Each structure stands twice: as structure tokens, then as C-alpha cells.
Image (tube, rainbow, N blue to C red; front, side):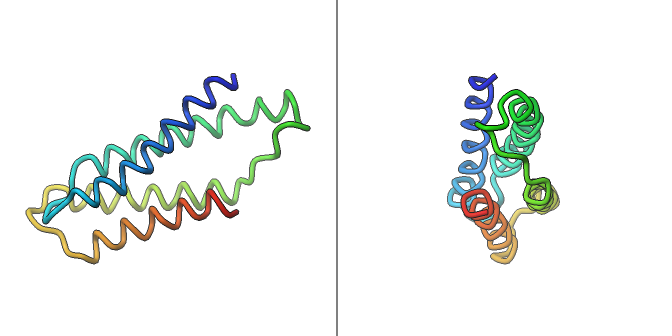
Length: 116
């Protein structure tokens, strides 16, 4: 089960990095890679949480309890990224506010994961 967790964690990190790289590669129009990466982060994040509960039950000394508040906030942030991305993906040009919002939300999500 730990192998599956490690694979999912790698994919989750890849999705998060993909959002930021997609922003860097976007000139005027949002790259579809941003929404795909956010969706990858969402799905792998949900799978990581689903795997974590049995890991905690099996060995509570090795795995710390899941912080549902942290997970909920991260979920809301990635959902906001998805909504912004899907609303603006077909526009010929997006404002810097949209790009900045996605970048800020992604950065906040990374900081929450690393520092909380």
C-alpha cells in the first residue's frame, strides 16, 4: 500500500508542478495543461487521502492522523483553480488577474502542504 501511496504522491506533485509550468508557458491564452494538471492533483489528492486512512489504522505510530481541515482547505483551493481554469480556457486572451489568481492559489496550496 505504501508503494501505491508513493506513486500517487509523485503524480500529485507532478500535477501541482504542471499547473505552474502551464502558467509559465501560457502567453495570452490559458494552456489546457493547467486544467488537466489541476484535475490530476485533485484526483490523486483524493486517492492519497483515501489510502491514508487504512495506513493510519494499520500503523498509528508510523502515520500521523489526517488533518481534515487542512485537506478541506486544499480541496477548496484546487476546486477554485479548476473553476477559474475551465471558465477561462476558451478565451482568446486572459487577464493578468486570472493568471495571478491561479499562480497565487497554487502557491498557497504548496505552502499549506509544506508548512502546515
